[in-house]
Length: 201
Image 1 (cartoon, rainbow, N blue to C red):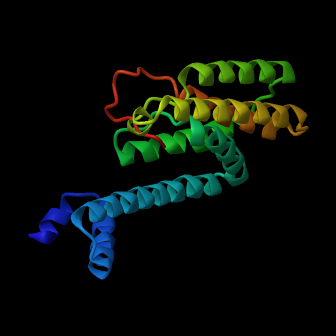
Image 2 (cartoon, rainbow, N blue to C red; image 1 turned 180 degrees about the horizontal axis):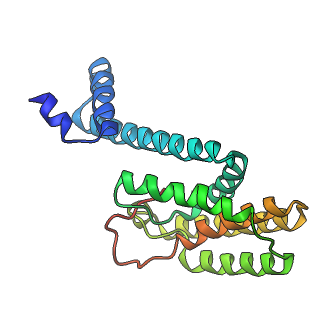
């Protein structure tokens, strides 16, 4: 019966269940602690799997360095601004490849003047002012002061990235930093009335 149940769930969830059960047996925690551990492990396994897929694809296409730079810029905004997430891990993996491999590829093909980069970052700051932190189950439970702090931190990081980008001489690196930050900002835009399928990522 247990094997049959495991066949109906994803491999990452099955792995999380097995590890959580083992840890719970060793520590003898209650069911609430077990469920928290299981959820945390499942998210960890999903993120590791997703990153392996993305970075393997980037390596195959000789875009590994570009993807890392793009991802870093994206993460520096995303960690405080939050944003929408795909409803399933499979869809998330597919979208992640398009974002973190496809966009860096495009960034290597275009040249953006500093004046345009400045305008893009200013627009990003406006987006963050109105939408950060993005409305997720996590941010919905936050106090107003916490939300204000996250918004200010995300905007500050946006301006720091803008200054760094403007002073970098390499065109491709400028594009990657700009595109990564812009994607993170755009993904904060959503309706505040619907939480279904929306998580911090």
